[in-house]
Length: 278
Image (cartoon, rainbow, N blue to C red; front, side, top):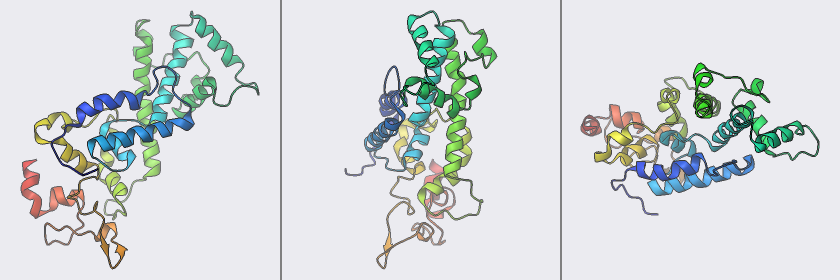
């Protein structure tokens, strides 16, 4: 696909893609072994639509899309809360209770709904609340009207999903010293954007709504390591060998500095007029 930098606002595309990525199946999420495949396919489709080709983790962080497996854990716990707290009078709730009682049997399917719900509680650090019925974790959930109690409980789960997502990202990309030289684009991204990991990861960056008249996709590609104007992103070869990250020198000035996002946007005198305009 030919690369283009035409003015494109990703917000309308996200309005279509976010429900699919966050909830690919309306009722019960797919088994865990297929969740990663669904997430990869949807993220790849989103990247092709936005012409923003970078690591999947970076795209998900930039667009406020939590991992599908964590979203499934949230939905499964909410499902369990529904049948053990808010709608225990339903026939389906009684059948679910009977299924939970037989969960420990050897004939129970390994990827059954009940075992996946138990795994979801362990994933979000709520193993003490299973099998329940779970206690009201906050005052807002306890005082919520019966019709809104499940929604309040789902709101309570979102920070837990964010905390687990941050834990996984920190484990995969541990913090580096401030003066460390990154060895690749993904490591450089997390070194630059690590403070933003402690914000609300469910929301897209504000600039996508603020900079609608100034082609926010250019800034999105710049932030997500997918803009061809950044030397550290482009492939460079010298003497039949690939040039390493720190050897990709900025071509816009004579400081012989590595041409990464920090230098191009904040330090380079050759692009200072563009940075000031932004």
